[in-house]
Length: 421
Image 1: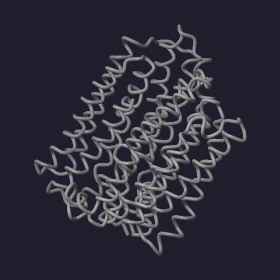
Image 2: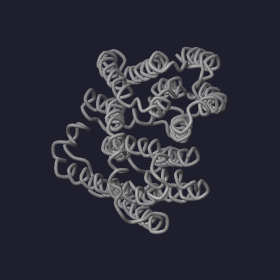
Image 3: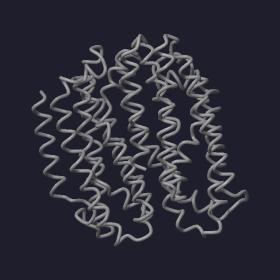
Image 4: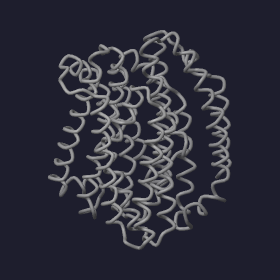
C-alpha cells in the first residue's frame, strides 16, 4: 500500500515538474491544477469514507460472502460516481464559478469522464490489499502511474496542448476500469449480500461525513486563493506548486494508517505496539528528510520546477510543517473502535479553525497566511483526537505513538522553519 501511494504521489509530482519544463504556458498549468482540484472535491470525501469502512468491516463479513460483497461494493461505487459526474456536468455553469472563480474550465467533459472511470483505481488498490496480493498491487501501481505520466506529459512535450493530455487520461481511466472488470470476473462473484452491504453503509456514513469535512478543509485553501485573488490562474498555480507537503509524507502516512486499520480492528492490544514501532520508522525517515528539504529549498526548488515558481518556496516550506500532524495516528485507532461519529465532530472543529484562521491570515500574509492556517488547524485536530482517545477509551498517546521522538523532531522542525525566514 505504501508503494502504491508513493507511485500515485510520485507520478503527480513528476507530472508537475515536467509540465513546468515544457512550453505549456503557466495559464494552462493553472487550468490543469484547477481540474485536479475539482476532481479532489468531487471524489475524495466519499471514496475515502467508503474505503475506510470497507477495510474495517471486511474481516466481519463471512468468508463465503466476501467475493459477492466486493462485487457489490464495486457496483455501488460505479453508480455513485456516475451520479456525481452527471450531476456536476449538469450544474457546471454555477458550480465551476463557485469553486474556481472562473466562468468555465477548458476540457471539463473529458476530465469528468476520467474521474468516473478512474474510480476503478481506488477499488483495485484496496481490493488487492483485501485479496492479499501485494505483488500484483505493486505491478498495477507501477504500470498505470507510469502510463499516467506519459498520458499528461507527452502531449505537452509535443506541443499539442492540454486537451489531448486530458483525453489521454480519460482513455487510461477506461483501461483501468476494464482491468477491474477482468479481476472481478476471476476473484469476485455475482450476487447480492444485502446484510453485509447494509452494515458497510451504516459504518461508512460517519466516515464519509468526516472525509467530506476533511475535503472541505483541504478544498477551502484553493477556494480562498481563488476568492481572494479573483480566480487568477497564475497565482493559483503558484499556490498549488507550493502547497505540496513532503513528497513522501502524505503518501506514506495515509498508506500506513490504511494498512494498519484491519489489524487494529481485528486485535487492538496486539496491533498498538506494532503501530508504535512501525510509526517510529516513518519518523526516522520523514522528519530528517523534511528538515533537509526545508533548509535547502531556495537552492533546488526553482531548478526542479522553474524560476516562474520561485514565489512558491515560502508556501512550500510552511506546508512542510503539516508533517507534525501527519505523524500522529489516533484517527486510525478511533475508526477501529467504531468511534466514527467522534472523528466526524472533531473534523468540524478543524474545518471551522481552518476557515476562520484562513480569512484572518490571508489579508496580512497572502498565500503564506493560507498555509499557516492549515498547519495550525491540522495540528490542533490531531491533538484533540489524541486527548479524546485517552479520556474516552483510556488509550494514552504513548501506546501507539513514540511521544519522545515526536516531540523532539517537532521542535527541530519548528527551529528549522524559523531559520528559513
